[in-house]
Image (cartoon, rainbow, N blue to C red):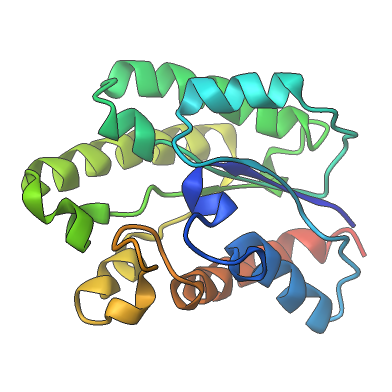
Length: 201
């Protein structure tokens, strides 16, 4: 079976080793649980907005159909001040692309909420309340669109906020998650992925 992870720094694992990426960790977990999954394909990079990800997918050589596609995007749209309307437009296009990569099986797409980086040391010189509010607004958008499209949705918000109590959940840059945080995410996503792939065995 085949998995594709689409996103930005949170998916490519900026600040962590390739083995620590949550997509890689969930691949290992799935294989441990009896699923025969190839190493996940990943299209993601630090700093990408919804527009950047669309361009990267268009330029990539992909071979659909994928059994599972994940989508985590939007933090850089928020950071760059692009606003909710532009985010909604970009996310809508990406969600349809993701569904298309599963040959139209929307239920085989998992959308992940944008983590709340307002709790990180990196953000403490900024308006943390504004960051929190803007990310929450973006997550309302991606959640509503995912449900309307019949895609799966996983909220990472609470887990990302644990970094307040546990600095080990962050990479050395004080912003991006560490392998420990990605392990939490992998375990949160795991039951959704198992449910999807159980219909493909």
